[in-house]
Length: 168
Image (cartoon, rainbow, N blue to C red; front, top):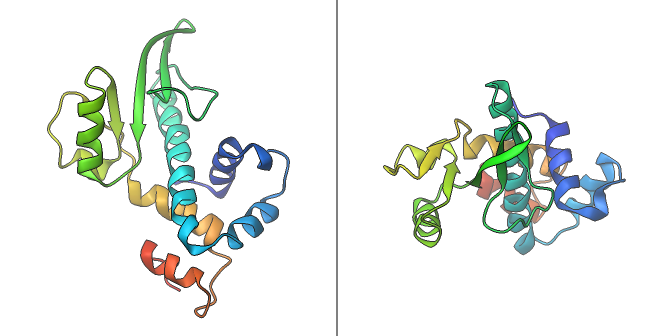
């Protein structure tokens, strides 16, 4: 179960200007974003949250892993460590788009790719690993945390809720 605090941690990691602000201020910010931009923000936060959740999952399995400090680290997102030394780097993709994953594999054929469960079920590639984390769960956690305050059916945000399957 992904918690609100994990979503807010992802927001703070992805947006330097939010490092020292309250959760309420973060929600207020996202409630003021225009409809055309909110989907990109949700996708960005979802990707960062995916990194956090996958590293936590690996560590629960006894695998030492870490997220690169920069959210725009070139090509890869996390490192697998052994005795604090990087032994492998992985690229993570939080999506339900098979074509996006296929394009990524084609562009970076030598980079191991970890994907959400929805796309992993439809892919047969030794370069793609199922994270065991669902894209829908990530998206729901981000939407519930950041957009849940906006339940006015007359609000333009209702369109976003409809797109993400939220009951507005």
